[in-house]
Image (cartoon, rainbow, N blue to C red; front, side, top):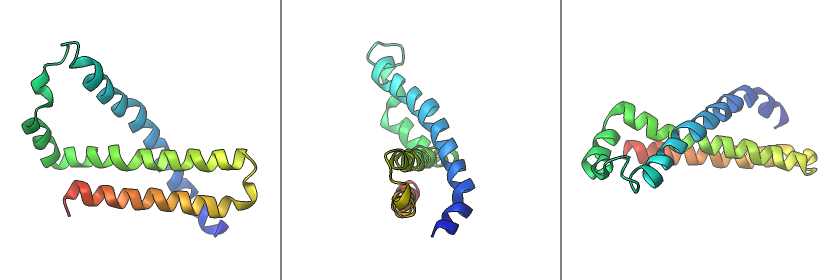
Length: 119
């Protein structure tokens, strides 16, 4: 199992890095718009209307962005939890912890794909 994790490490780091990008830039902007922009009147309330949100979710590029917003932060969280486990003395059970966490992230990504594609 350790050899498989070592071979998958570049892929995990790629997903982790993009999860940081998505989590810090896009989700932060979305939270600012929804929680501050609309209540303060900076952003018109009809900007978040159902028709506009549905148009975004119906567009292939919009679906790709929604999938990234769902899946990539899961990989970021899984990698952070794995590192936290190692830092607290879990180095001897790293293979098991990594398998479980990355499996949960992969399963969550699959659910995200099904949710975004409407399957």
